[in-house]
Structures are given as structure tokens and as C-alpha cells.
Image 1 (cartoon, rainbow over the protein chains, first blue to last red):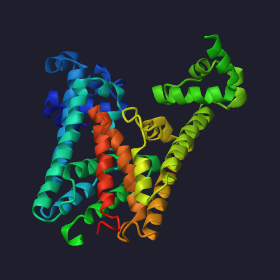
Image 2 (cartoon, one colour):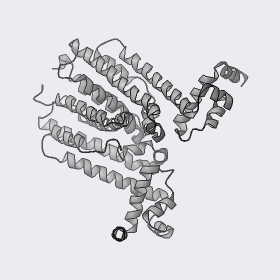
Image 3 (cartoon, helix red, strand yellow):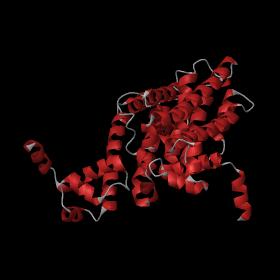
Image 4 (tube, rainbow over the protein chains, first blue to last red):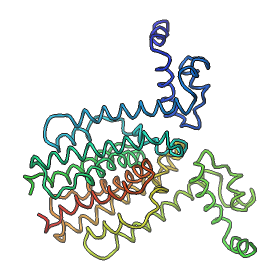
Length: 200
Length: 200
């Protein structure tokens, strides 16, 4: 216990407040996350919280931005993997995920308070816009290098790829089994494989 | 008003209770839907409700089953449309939808109380399993008729198609715009078109 408290004290208060807000948003949603609960979980006083943040919306924005940044960093690792465009998209789609837990950013689209506030919705919108753009870039590179056929539409295909992941989470949750997620990914990769230049 | 009351009275009480439960589940989720609120919206007394249903879980199950049946009927209309397999899948994917409202069955996967109860989750799981099977059948028929290439995997592709729709709703909600949904559908149809026998 002493060691745990010591470690927690070492992290700065602002960080602890953001991490506590992320956990509570995930567990209880925006409406169920009170400033009091955030302070208790972070081990921070009310004065300390309002020293760092103007209030719950400000903290929620910091928490959502942090979640979005982590998703981008994890995705970018896949996109920067070595190999062809299809291999890089495959690395992104097949990276290890806690499928039944769901996508931390996608799940925010089901929080009515987050979606109703344009400021809180913005990082969610931006994350998916960025993902679609990055995947379109990877596909366009593959087309330029002659790996993928000219018939492939990078922008539309990229949106399809992102939708497959988000929909895969929905199907896995409905089945309480990650198998439909994996099958949805297999399916889109098979479809993409038909567009590789040597598949003609 | 007299006419409205007259019309409502004409519908039987059991029907009114089911429809009221569907509306409340949609608006407030399972946890926010009280037996009292259902009775008030249905204009039915407590005795009447317990005459028809054993309680809230029983009514919720009837409501979820009704929603699932409607989705199946609407989807089946697309699958039974005339034309090739790809035309029938296109009819299903492009049928008019209130995209920003979301999928009435898919949204239930975000209701923690519905997902935690195996009996309430069952119709949600069954609906997606049925959709995947029906689309796989349509694709397999297209392959047998020589419309689609042998390289197309009907089962995996069907799961991808269902995931694209569900993920399309997520992306539309994130953007507060139905355009990403339409683009995800365009993308998967383009990918499927590359598997038509005359595209090779």
C-alpha cells in the first residue's frame, strides 16, 4: 500500500484527474461522472481540481483528447509498419484489441451528452476523419506503387475499412464473442486482396 | 383529440404496452424505463400490464423481438429484390434509413442492461446472425450463377457487409452527418464490384 500511494503521489495531480475522468467516463458515461467522484478517484481536493481545470466539461475534453491521442498513436504504428499498403492495412486491422470491451473512441458516439456538446464531439469526429484520411493515404500510395489496381477508390475504401472495425465491435458485442469481429476483418481483407495488382 | 383517443382505444392494450416500451427503451434505455412510465405512455393500468406481461423484463423482450422482426422484414425486402446478387445487396445497403438516428437493433448492443441479460441479448444476437446468413446465401447464389468470382468468400463477406452498415452508423454519428455512412457503403460496393465475373 505504501508503495502504491508513493507511486500515485509521484504522478502529478492534473494527470491523475485526467486518468480518473477517463475511467469514469468509460464506466458511467458523462451524465454519471460527477466532479466529486473524479476528485475521490484521483485523490485530489476540489480546490486542486479547479486549479487545473475549469470544471467537468474541461476535464472531460482533456480525457477524450487523451483517449483519441492514444488511438491515433496505436493506429499509426500499424500504418508505419514495413511492407505493402495491404500489409500495412492488415497490420492495423489485426493488431491486438480487447474486442468485447469495444473501441474507446467509437463508444463515445453512444454517449448522448458527449454527442450533444459540439466541443466534446469534436475530438471524436476528428479521430475518425484522421483515420479515414490516413488509410486513404496508405491505399493511394499502394496504388501509385502499382501494388493496388487503379479501380480501387482510396477515400471510399478507407471509410469502409474504418466502418468494418467499428461495426465489428457491434457484432462482437451482440454475439458476446469476438469471432464476428475477426470474420468482418477477414472479409474486407479478402475483398482488398482482389484489388492487388497481381490478383487481376 | 377525440379521434386520436378513439384510434388509440382501438388498438389493443398489449400492443400499446409493447409500442410504449419500444419508445421508452429507445429514449431512455432499459435502466431508465420504469413500469410506471410504460403504463402512463400506453394509457394502461398496472393490473392490465401484469395481466398481459409478467413484468418489465417480459415486456422488454416483447419490445426487442418486435424491433428485430421489423428489421428482418425490411432487410428481406432488399434481399428479395429482382436482379443479380450484387443488385440485391445494393438494394439492401441503399434502402432509405434514418442514419443519424441509428440502427434500432445495433443500438441495443450499447445498453449495458440488455447485453448483461442473456434472454434480452438473444434476439439481438439472432438478428445479426440471421442477417449474416441471409447475405451469405445471396452471395453464394451469385457465385453459383457465375455472377461473382469463386474467390469471393460468402460467409466472411456477409459479415463484412453487416459490419459496414453498423460501423457506418457510428461514423455518421461521430460526424453528425450521414455522408460517412454513404461513403462506407459506396466503398464496400466498389470492392464487391471487383468480384463480379465480368470485372476480372
